[in-house]
Image (cartoon, rainbow over all chains, first blue to last red; front, top):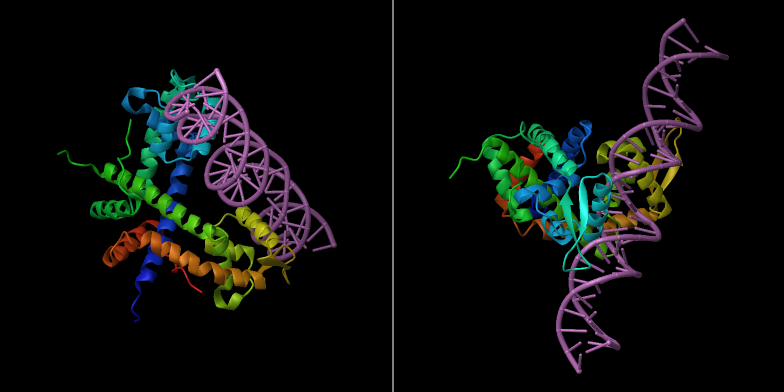
Length: 154
Length: 154
DNA sequence: GACATATAGATGCAACTGCATTAATGTCAA
DNA sequence: TTGACATTAATGCAGTTGCATCTATATGTC
């Protein structure tokens, strides 16, 4: 049996990373959507704004935390504002800026999405891997993506 | 130090899978685009059509191999046809169907994209992981995504 | 103050995705 | 043959992304 070259191993990881991501994200998105809840990207914003007692945040802060491009965030906030989940407030001391704040509805939505989201991830990712492999996988993926603070809960 | 629960480990993997995927795909797409070459999704089609001596394929076949939705493939083929990379040929024996075939330009493009693509993946994914970890990672990701035939080359 | 420059955020445009539906053809049973 | 049903592919529409550009405000320099 031929020796597999390093480049082939790298490509192997590439292909499987794409496939695994595709499958997992699709399943989680579908599960959340099936309950009539908004997409993951919306949840990420809700979650970020819920941290530390729901303080106001500048779009720039959100951008950095969520790794979303400025123009995408701008329009995501448009849609979330239209849906009544967040408010844009003029930024005191900087006429260019704004503060983003959850509405009561937004806070409620975050609490409502969280269990659906958590369960979907658990059911999608949980069954395939024993606990030992989960740790190992997190470590290896971390080596690729760089380390970040863990996902938070309610 | 508190014991980390299984659910937290699962969420940990979820977050890192998303981050790692995001980083790697962005870098590879950017590298390929920087050379004026078409996106990865286009390359996947070119590659699939290049296999086995560039035989014609039905959109349905492509759909299954590439895991692309029917309506997305239909329009991707529109764009690739407009770009002169593929041809749609009426399907003998099935008036509903069609055969997709690479043009000479499409074949040339596949050969031109491949090295850029391979190098980009290598440079993005290679440096972070020793060979031993590559094998382990491929195995773990395979457990999530299901196994598939490896990515091919020129 | 007047100017150049930097920063925060929005927007026009094209590509792409998902969803629902449609049009055209094929298949099969009566 | 005909009519019900299945299959192949396209399409209208809305949401989302990337890119380039634009507007408005801030900041620093003279």
